[in-house]
Image (cartoon, rainbow, N blue to C red; front, top):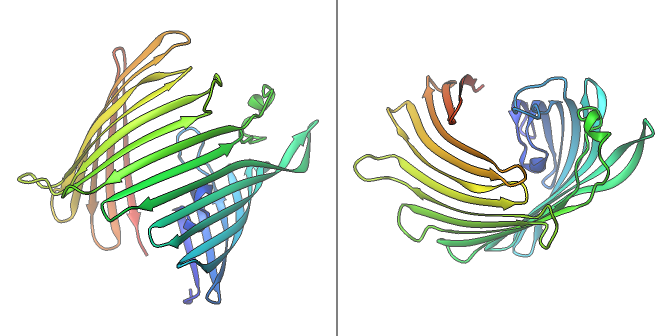
Length: 322
């Protein structure tokens, strides 16, 4: 490809249409002058249940992006069109819009929205616009060591007309859900990163309202043993589930070409509706071997241990760059 165009293949997330998510396929992108660019992609979206490959979920799309200046910084605005299918029958069709900017030195802004333009009424597909998702976030850095982030979203249930046919028959309403998230991060202590976060959805007395609180700490360049470690804890509460989720992870270079990590996570949830309790101990291990400049070999293990059962998963992947 020449200097103004590029071709990508595999699983990718493009920053200009980042909230669309992962695409398994090919992407062709080209610049038109200094400010304009565009792209087209074709492939499939990951499987709904396990994020694996599912080539029956074929999708195509295109987008146009404009880079410009704003205030003392820069901005990038993108508009795109996505057509998603299931077994080549229309599943979802929507217009995607995204804005990224840093109007002043310490402030970063991001916004995205999705306008669905396909619906099924009386068994017949129709074009009908419906704003199903709007998301906006801001991050402000008070200094190099302290930053605050805030995000707000309002969304409706996105309906995939082929994938969830049986679900569609039972949908009686499609009310909007709204949520607010706040996060704080500091790196004031050398080799440490500390984060606090809180989230609230459907603030008020709505039966579907929920909130979650969490904290995490990341320790780099640990003396004596080298490597890095992280610890996190979160508390979730809603009308349907309440409980704690906490864990530890340690990672380091084992040799010059081998990188490894090991982790432990504990889940203690209660489901108030039927008073069922869920307790899990989860162990994980990752090994990545850089064979050479072109090939990487990865191994992943996850074991889930409950009182009455145990589940284990192994993944091996070979990645090449060309």
